[in-house]
View 1 (cartoon, protein in one colour):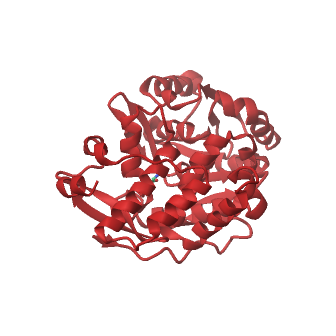
View 2: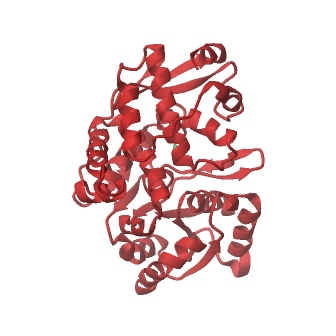
Length: 377
Ligand code: GLY
């Protein structure tokens, strides 16, 4: 079992400006967070592009809602750009859509090696546009402007890019760190409540693995939400969403800086995901969205941790109480998940690395073999 101390040295030196740095050696990059930050996109992206072309990839929904604001920002800074819009949803994250992006980049020499790709959307856009950037001419720079809570706190940071194949999600991909992540929480005003909840599951995950104070903040918001509207309103009333996003990004930045290529510490970001991915496979990505499956998976992982004696007693109850309060209280049986876990790309021969909690705010990696897990479930 590998244990890690709680994340203590959060990267908050610049917290009032809300600029965090992902300290990848030799290639550090900024995460700029602020309501209305999209209006700064022209200047920030233009500075990076330095006169070269900016190729924006977005999806139909995001572009219809927020495309005009991004274009106005790019135009006002005189940043030369063109736009490719894909259909929304996971179904677009495939080789055909990627080929369409490559063809568009090639038309009339639209994107040279010195230009950059700007991914403007949720996780699907970030993943496919990021993968196009990782592979176009063996790699061009990429800027991520996430539009969903899930993408703001997780997928836009850390450089994981991928497409799906019929054999599985994210089976083909690359690590390709962005040059800049620009987060404008005002974009969340148009996010459907269910999508907000999916991002909130990842927020709760960060609290569970690395920050009891973040976990407590969300408990506080969930209590405030009881009987008074949704959790998203309560977070706006009782906390500041940009602070919540900053806390999550601080944790992710610190973990990614230490383990860019996911060979150790970074695995703790998968708390709830091992069971969550199995739940997604079991239901064919239909019943639950990713965040909801991860929420169900976090509850299972906390219970398994207690049964193994790794997790402090009472932790599972606390996790379930918060998930219930956040509208994410899904209960899934775990006994039939093992076959799905065995075909996950993170399975080991003979078993799996489970991400468990010692307590709220501290995660451990616990290798377990299939027989033992089967008995526990
Ligand atoms: N989403 C998990 C990671 O970035 O490693």
